[in-house]
Amino acid sequence: MKIIGRDAENAKLKSWYKSGKAEFIAIYGRRRVGKTYLVNTFFDNQFTFDATGIIGGTRTEELDAFYSALVEYGYSGPKPKKWMEAFESLKGLLKEKIVKGKRAVVFIDELPCLATPKSDLVKALDYFWNKWGSRQKELMLIVCGSATSWIVRNIINNKGGLHNRITHEMHLFPFHLKETKEFLQANKFKWNDITVLQAYMILGGIPYYLGLLDSGISLADNIDALFFADGAQLRGEYERLYKSLFKTPERYKAIIKLLSDTKKGLTRKEIAEKLKVPNNGHLSDMLEDLVNCDFIRHYNVLGKSVRSSGGLYQLVDFFSLFHASFIKSKNTDPHYWQHTLNTTTQNNWYGLTYEKVTMAHIPQILRAIGMDRILTEYYSWRSQSSDPGAQIDLIIDRADGFLNLCEVKYAKGDYALTKAEAEKIDNRVSAFQQETGTDKNILVTLITVKPVKENAWTDTVSSFVTLQDLLV
Image (tube, rainbow, N blue to C red; front, side, top):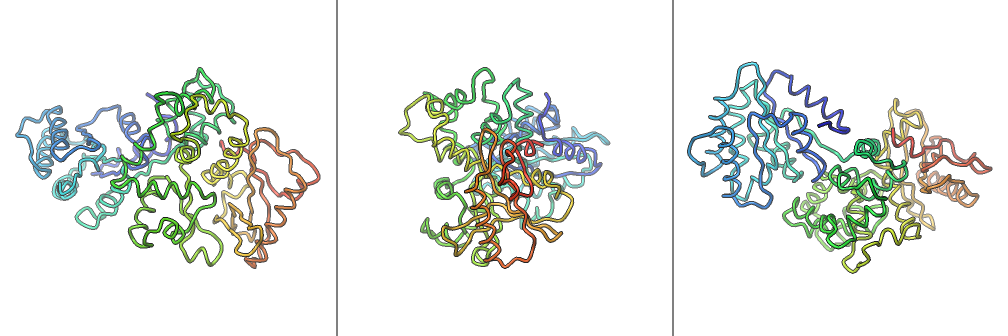
């Protein structure tokens, strides 16, 4: 079966497979993003050994599952009672199967599930790899898991025996718009680019969610069927998602809910104050977990008072954004999305969400304005003194002495810049220059869905970016 997108990931797996040395690879990423599918498809399910953890399983259940996998691959020894014994059994099995000069691929999926409290799984894996596995140049060990924070802390950034033992890591991100379009086209969808964009803004670039869409009905009917109809398949996905990733999901969901109510993002200090929790290392760990799971982003902001707080955190997971905005238990209309098409509520939400889409496509924007080959930094800015408060979502700071101040506008039809909008942009530029004291040249970039109609006010804009540019 063909893998849609993932060209870079496929190239890496191919290179590592042919490296001629022992490889220990950790793959992580948000639940439903396609980690297992990528590995299974790339290797065509041809493994020397593979096993999968059980979500929510007990220590006994996890060991039983691992033992069943050993038996499936030909193991005939005693049933292991602890993880040291389980990995010794795996070593014995692999000794019989490894052929000199032929790559032996071992895939352990949902590894965090196997690591139940006080199970010592990590110590056993550490001993298995350091004592034997790392010396087998035919061995390619791949571990994977949706509990991204666990993989990062316990495997990739391990402080003990596995410290610096991972030979490669792969963070599998959601699809970008281009890959989303390719996925839908490969599944016989005839949707235009704006419909693809709207599907992306609701479901994100998550292959599993996109795979639930029906090409025979409209997007609105699809969204009603998936979220609002009786027994809708994704109605309870939000709860399942966070529960599967975090041991204390309510604490994480509280952060998500708070950020969903705040368009521009909050500092760590502001999050602590609003949630009435200590601004300490535990909060930092939770924020880092959410960043690693691609639910939120941490970005720099130009301005001393914000930078001193470590920048802003902003919710960027489109599925969580949609859930926070529209999926409410009191909503009983099974055709809610169809019935609210083209309303102010939907259009405003699409407008706010399109801003986050652009932030997920910085490389495409840089390419569109011809800045992909020079050194650039990007950040946001919010005024500390102007009234009403001015904010610029995206500033591209270029090594050639220029700054691009980006304005984002969502409209399904051609966009025409009005006198009022042009004046607002000028006011933001003036406030930015005055407060930052920058001596760099400032250019305005306008990011829209369709091309901008030329009129008397378009001269205030230096460059234009459209949805077509984001689809590159």
